[in-house]
Amino acid sequence: MKHASVITGILLAIASATLLQGSGAGEPSRSNPPLPKTGRERRILAVLDEMVNSHQTYLSVPPEDGRALRLLTEAIAGKRVVEIGTSTGYSSLWFCLALEKTDGRLITFEIDHQRASMARQHFKEAGVEKLVAVVEGDAHQEVTKLQGAIDVAFIDADKGGYVDYLNKLLPLVRPGGLILAHNVDMVPEYVKAVTTNADLETIFYMEGAGLAVTLKKP
Image (cartoon, rainbow, N blue to C red):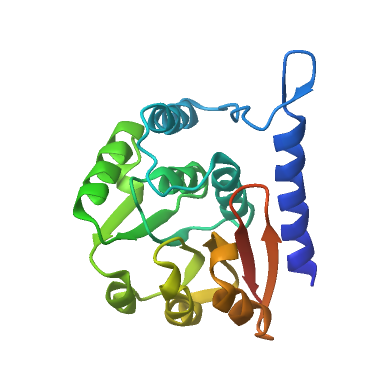
């Protein structure tokens, strides 16, 4: 339970920051952007902003969930992240904010060639193309080719496939690693799977579009 308590604290901190960061004289604002500490952060955040402004965030996570992905990955010093559902690369870039700190890498799966191409362009613009490997094709088949331990797995693709993705990724997730799933209000069978398994501890972060945060117990 110690690890789950730490994760809960991190998520509460994200929620508090989202509510309390203000514009002007301490006014609460959910849309206040994170403040870049380095030039690399500034470049990634600039691309994220441009994606939103130019409406290139098809089926992407909202910023609240993007920040959660980044904070959770960085908090556990995640070095190997696997993402199911690249879309145009918005959530991937949030992971990259963490991975450029942890010296990690992202493997992301996308079935749509046009969206995968857009994602690659966004990664190049953000200067993180060396941190990301984009795998095109049906992730249900492609993930079976993965080898080696995973620190963080993120599922945000076809909702009917969530449990299959979980079953295929879980053996590779290291003890103490995380499985994250988006839009969990749409996948009751996945929620049941992660809340009835004694090897897992799951909490739900609902500030964005619903993020299940599952710890694989050590």
